[in-house]
Amino acid sequence: MNEWVITTVITLGIGVITYFLKRTMSQVDRHDTEIREGREQSASKEDLKEQTKELKDDIRKIREDYTPRDTHQKDFDECRKDIKEIRENYLTKDDFIREISKMDRKLDRMMEMMIEAAKKG
Image (cartoon, rainbow, N blue to C red; front, side):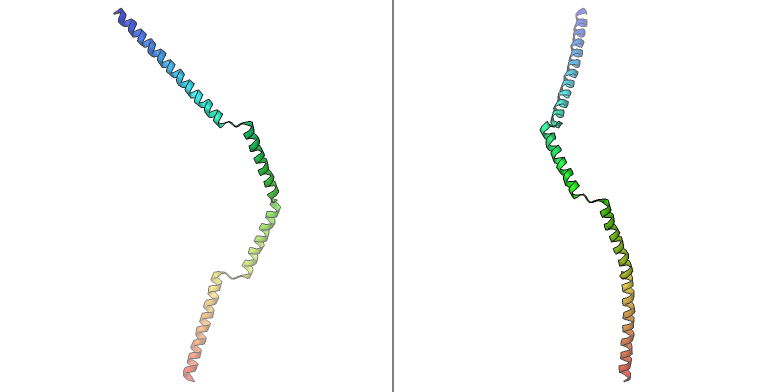
């Protein structure tokens, strides 16, 4: 019976050691993966210099093409003025249809009058 207890204790000891060894190795593997990902995501000084140069060029282009807000405001004011002028000087679709209908009625009356005059005369 004494041997059975010793065998069980040794087996449990090996199991505990194996568990902690596996856990430690898993942590090492995970840290290795994280370090590898960190290296892949990091940029070299040359890459940073190149990106900085590209960004500075982009900023310079934006400054060259930049239009001040006042200029845009003037353009908007001109558009508003044009819209007001269009509202005042042009017919709406409904007004056009109404006027054409009036003209059609007048033409119909003239046609009827001409037909009646032709019948009488």
